[in-house]
Length: 391
Image (cartoon, rainbow, N blue to C red; front, side):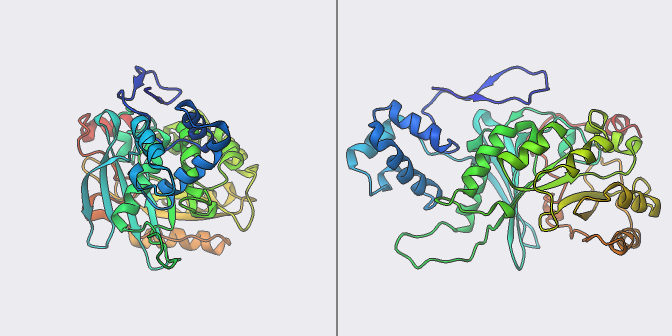
């Protein structure tokens, strides 16, 4: 019963299928799991209850062995083991930065690999997860963008990244133990490899699992989806996922953004901002985050800061300034600290929060824009990258 491995809708590529084998319960919606259980003989009247029981074992207790699901009859557990698996991506390598950041290289079906990053902070722990193997957007400042798109991740491969991080943090509750409200993994950001809105259904289903009150139980306000500007899917994100929204903005003119974020050639700044102004959940309490990577001599002038303020007028927002994290072959340099602070000051005086992101995990290539599968072979020279960026 192989499941099709989804492909980004606007990329010409060969269809792929996941390897043959038993269907994986991880990543199934509750409706899909119910249908699967009925399909192997679970009585219709029992199916909803069985889904609730199995769901809690997988997503609340973190159990991967049907034999451990002790509130199910032994013969039913045996039947489940004969027909299904509970599998998450395989951790290939785990690196820990001097600042405590953890980077996991994980292997998914077909032998492909993606990277996942956990960032511990004093008041929260954020997991940066991937939605695609590679990326189709080729943003010229992003290391992942130099890697060819292979395929979209399934919902199971996306929520599986959360599950392996909880494994590593030893954060699954223990049956019978006092409830511990401390969450080492308290936030999710879809800011890893890939464009989440080019894999909408799988991202949606995975985040619904993360937010489910009978499982991992993360609030929608603790999940942030970052998009480069797939305009047709922005309203749908609010309606079907309901999470926080971040936008990889990075430029104040179409000429510059066309080079930095090539999707701008399809949906330009004006179209993107129109979509953001009408975003159903925009309010002062749920601001849109504009991500802005600071590139020396490219987008970091006082004039850029003032244009940015005019562009976002009327949108409840904060501007997250990101010092460029350099990578081998990168065609850009990081803006100076003085330039970044001057840029931030102009924005702050205009009434917008303008935090400067502290680079994390640079020593293990885990910082923003640096993620790239270690086994990816489609290397590009600095000259090739510069040429594609129009530099």
